[in-house]
Amino acid sequence: MDKNLDRLNIYASRLLSEKEYFVPGHRACQGCAEALAVRLVAKALGRNTVVASATGCMEIVSSPLPLTSWNVPWMHVAFENAAAVASGIEAGLKVLMRKKRIPQQKITVMAMAGDGGTSDIGLQALSGAMERGHDFVYCCFDNEAYMNTGIQRSSATPFGASTTTSPAGSLVAGQTSWKKNMPEIAAAHNIPYVATACTSYPFDLMEKVKKAAAIKGPAYVHILSVCPTGWRLPTQMAILAGRLAVETGMFPLYEVERGRYTLNVELTELRPIEEYLKIQGRFRHLTQEMIAQIQQRVREEYEKLKKKVQLTNED
Amino acid sequence: MSHKKELIKFQIDGLTVEAEKGQMLLPAALEYGFEIPHLCYHEAVSPYGACRLCLVEVTKRGRTMMTTSCNYPVDAGLDVATNTENVQRARQMILELLLARAPHSEKIRAMARDAGVEETRFRVIEDADDCILCGLCERVCREVVGANALTFVNRGDRREVAPPFGDPIACIACGACVYVCPTDCIKMKEEGDERTIVRWKRTLKMQPCQSCGKPFAPVFQLNWIIERAQLPKDFYALCPVCRKTKKG
Image 1 (tube, helix red, strand yellow):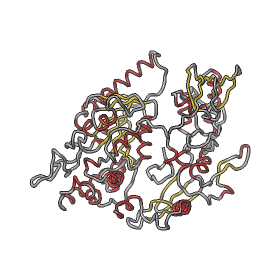
Image 2 (cartoon, rainbow over the protein chains, first blue to last red; image 1 turned 90 degrees about the vertical axis):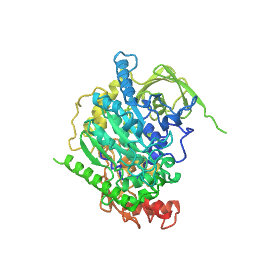
Image 3 (cartoon, rainbow over the protein chains, first blue to last red; image 1 turned 180 degrees about the vertical axis):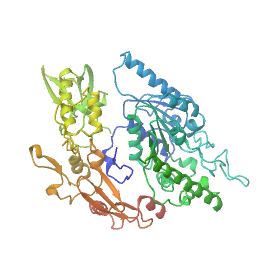
Image 4 (cartoon, chains in turn yellow, blue; image 1 turned 45 degrees about the vertical axis):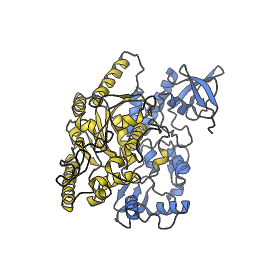
């Protein structure tokens, strides 16, 4: 699809569907970009969707008994097996259609989890489901820590971020390891579609989710969802933080279609990483050396990604 | 105080459904999960009935007729059949015609496959531009954007969507037509500080951000918005990111 939706200053917002499948009234924090991400994903997938959701913020806020925010079939499963349950649903639907218990139709199966449920606890089930080649969409809503239990570090927490289990003090300056590169792990499974997206680029996000649903076979979409509570950020700056994450090169938007890399927002020049770090309280303690260290790493990673784009687009 | 609209009961494929009075058949059926293929319908604009793919059989007072569901208002006691043999045959014919006209469109090819159409018996226009004259771009430009930059010109087999008198003087290069086109025949590209809508041959200079220097939107478009919304002249001096960071 050659629609150039990465240049997002187009008039399309009023052309989006007015139907909501993740409805308001849920209990997410003010300024929660993850709730926004879920809403956009549900909107993009539409009505014929079944969702398996791992434990996490989005399960807690959307389903306080006896209420629910979901207008599509939605199932809460354990922390580690969202992908396994989704593959079960997909197989079950296939059998029901073959036995003609339900009419032949296209039903999208979506598994969703946070960064903890994806890159720590659910990685094994996800890897298995991708390897078996089930036709489902996996959405990881990455807010870079276990936010719903009180901001504990996960393997997706970026280097230097202060969380309650990696507190910044006189000896250690926050998280000591680098963020686990989950999209690359998914791409290494040789699945047909992997993409990264961010709520600050809503059309790009929705287009990617639609593409992921249309493709046969497993698809993985990694969505950076800014968490003002956990990132110690004023609530009105959630969208800005997402834009800065992309424009500084911290979280590049790209997709991998059958091994072919495409950068969706191509940056000729990266914004200095300080702009992104200084607005967040979780990076408040960083020294100039550490910022320089992060900047260098971000540059290297971005160059690496650019090389991959070049290499896979030859011929 | 919420005002409840009048609901009307009727039947789709044997199922009793409810819809608001004045609503069209297609959105009501889609709401209930019936799959009716369509290309020229979009919920943000008025229905037009150009692609003819959303054909259904409607029985009203004992008389059955085939009609497009996107511009057929719901009525009490209707009996609608969305997938009869007649409907299927008509849809297959339309898809064959569309395949001949727009052979490169992924979406039409996928629809044809779903409907069991493998190939078309009509002469395929190999160098076709894939436009199916559904008029979505024209309706969006007029009703949603309000720029009125497009119109239908000529008649018969020379009919096409184009800027009036071939001059895209009113186009603000917003890209709404690019987004909405069902066959992807309208393309947009950005090179350096210029944005081009290829099909309408409209090239506009982009406004650079005063702070970071990155071009972010066409100057003509920004001036157009400023004029219509009566904003201060320097409202769009900064790009969306800088506007937030620089002002505080």
